[in-house]
Image (tube, rainbow, N blue to C red; front, top):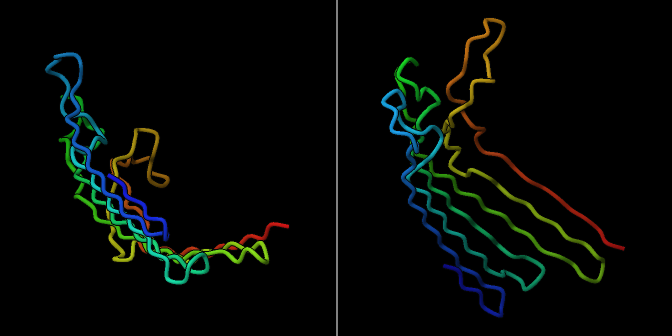
Length: 148
């Protein structure tokens, strides 16, 4: 669902439910890797000073994901933890100067969450295979562009 107003306000919410299964009924397969059952996102934008400063926010919630150990001969298949990520961005433009800019903080809560990895990823010189990788925590964005 999404609603936009003329003054620049915006609200949006989305939810997805999926139940992934293998098409074959082979008993040698476990759960489908990297397929969260629940995905939710909420977004909002509000003009603080019309065109000059717009505050935007997004909250994303993802359910747990199974790792790649989906074969009965693999080690035990595990799940990652759910994640909640909150982003906040202040953006705007100065039409007179052709300037656009944005300042943002992504993952405001510094949530450390992991996502499943495929077989191609290995750890260090021991060639030990990774099943999950922790994602980066809080990050910052600063951008500016000028059109002329």
